[in-house]
Image 1 (tube, rainbow, N blue to C red):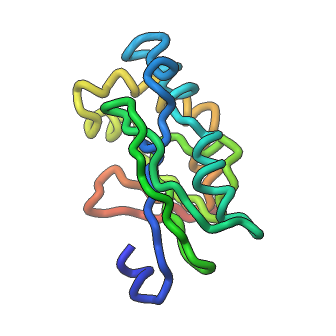
Image 2: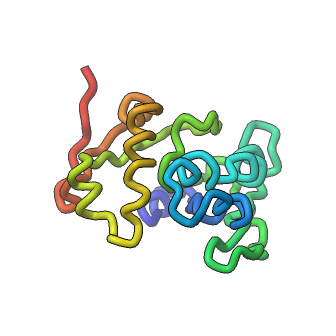
Length: 162
């Protein structure tokens, strides 16, 4: 975000993890259901309403940076942040493409299945089928404006399209 600020562009990072559904919905099918992780965890309606819609033309510019703490399953009570005209919102999180979110520029950080398995902590490996499904159904490398190969994070590589 610092490079944007140095260029005079106010920037706000919003992790999608602050917009997960309540645990009663997220975990309805258990704590390790890959399909629920893919389909139910993100509250994309709240994300659009509280973060993206206010930045549309004619919007207020008032953005809620987080809604719910996924660890405590309680409201974060985060104050709204005013993002001025020309400001940049950096939304990050897994499996955001294919949800009809009004995003201006999307970057997909791609990992091969082997690299993803290597870099996923053992206690989170149950999510790997969800990522495989996302790859198959959404095709994030094709859906994104830019794709960066991140198999080795020390050597990211921009994927050029034909």
